[in-house]
Length: 150
Image 1 (cartoon, rainbow, N blue to C red):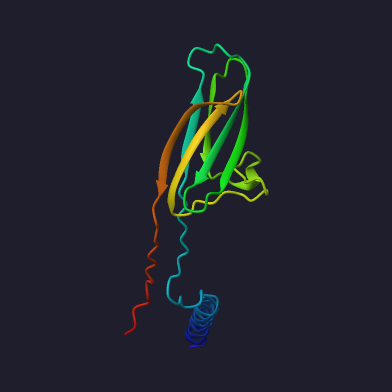
Image 2 (image 1 turned 180 degrees about the vertical axis):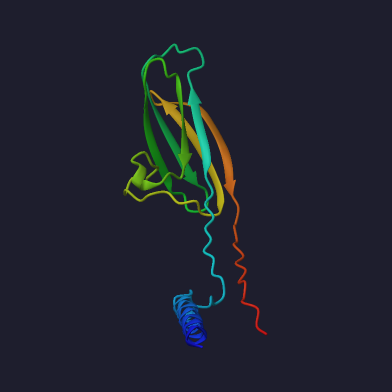
């Protein structure tokens, strides 16, 4: 009989350990999630480029100018093209932290505002390429995924 009490006591200890472990795991479980939350961003960019097709100029300076037709503001980016490189592509608008970005004469960084734009690139004071583009109005839809309630 002494052995059966020992076995019962051992099982009780094991059961208490498992119950304690379950309580600790239950207490440390992540909190119940609320609704899932998403953040969204939409940025439009236009890539503009110029190239001395046959590399005749060698090193030259390309001055890109973009005009917002609604406001009349002109944004400028000057790019040095090294010999052998022949040309360059630039992004409008570019991130001001990048260093190479379009800005107005007042130093205002360009933004991708909806509307029509015209652009040109000048080399040695002469227009060598030009074009038009339009930024559409963009909208973002956010869907909230809610926790199932029972």
